[in-house]
Length: 395
Image (cartoon, rainbow, N blue to C red):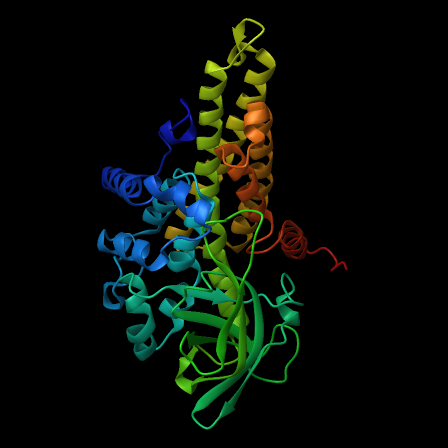
């Protein structure tokens, strides 16, 4: 659904006819592959990640911006914007998260910094949808403060020996390989870290358990253990000791793709709420005739449009090759807060129906909460911005 008069109707919309044809194709694929199965996957708290990724890869929807040489599509970033926006319309953030982990979170560093051998072994199968990828950063005692990571890898001959506990890993239970961030030297803080590709069949790797979550119920999230886990020394991605810096660049892409998804989720939720209010009669009139409710929804529509245009400005800057670290931080902070606000209003305006666990407003309410936590909390976004503005570092 689309809300009439949104920013997507404005002349400043950056998409060409080719982009819009792609959008129509993506929507058609999602309506066939994803939408009919959402309720089942949510109920089962799992979905066949590899089968779904394989189906999307056959349609050319995985690896949009990656080089033809790596098995990608060599498209511009606006195709990724479209993919994110259409994922936001399927009505299930868990599935959207699993897909975007594959497209924009676990694979960018490998594509940008990985050796030709690593790309052949791990990136190409991921882009073909034959291998599920995951990214492992967070640990039980280290989340937003990446500088406090304790997981470590030491060289033993021609192998890395990894000892680490990783937590909250999306796709972790079904992953064929994981891009793991660990310490590889005695330097402290954000220095001396390296990204290493760990295949799921590596000796010493195990999935400790699947985690039950408030939202995102359809996608698996796991606790992982690397107990003397051995992988080839050449599985290091990029420059040894520069893993933190590489990860920060990857997080920019992560923040933007979740923002694109969030805009479409919010817009769709508002549109569905308006339709519900048209048919819900109270005190002799449809609730949509209440000016108070109209103004509440109109205010949210305006804020969603502002975020959409900010996203488009970020995307355009990325296409031009500009650094959007600061802008992506602002966008994610705003998106997380706005998503929660929209979800709360949608539940409230659906009344008792909105509070039912198996109705879409409740699922949206549960799912929306993650955006202000994952990929950097709101507080971390604010910390980044204060540093960029030259304020003294607070506690």
